[in-house]
Length: 303
Image (cartoon, rainbow, N blue to C red; front, side, top):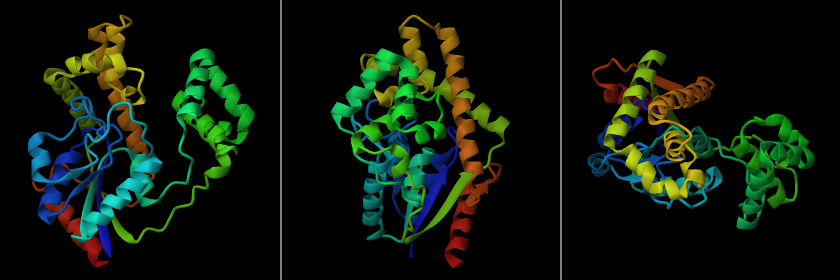
């Protein structure tokens, strides 16, 4: 049976380095599971692997799409499984690395088949949000799919918009399409994460934000500012710097806010992970984390 080794965990936890060490040791390739690194032109803010790291191991789904491309977890499921199949034709083990939990779930559990959203429907819902705000989204979804309205966060406009898009495109309520049933996969899955304490993780996040600023994140954000309406840029780091450029936030407030909002995002990732009993945590104080990861992988292969 083929094996998928998943190196996951919160942002700034050291996933990339560990995944590269593992893939290099196993002479295999890495499939990225990062919903922002897939876009071109924003390598600093999305912490894209360095040129040296990319040269060590072949990566897939890194900077492959323009910023204005629409992408979804459903499309990722299909494309990632295809790439994994290609890797497994040559090797028995593939490595996946990323913290976009929906992407990882899409590959490991599968997601329900949802319709591809047309440009017409997407524009229609976008105009609804622009003209009526989040209240208009809530009222619309409550009218066409009250069950879904009860399930999702009423303050998350992107979730509201997507539920409306699916319902309009499919012609039936989104809630009827979401079964939540896991698909059986014909491969073994080994999940790994680095088990930092929360204090240590937050310190890593703060230092990473400082490093991004020093590396030129502000200039990168300024370069893509004309495209700030795109979903690919609706993410921590860019949103705060766009606010500075719009004159509604000072730089002295924005940079600490980036760190704070990144820590909030990390908490959500940690909560998601806490619900998955299959994750194997590696002690970050170990001198050879890759060696411990390989031990866990080999043990799993013998079970």
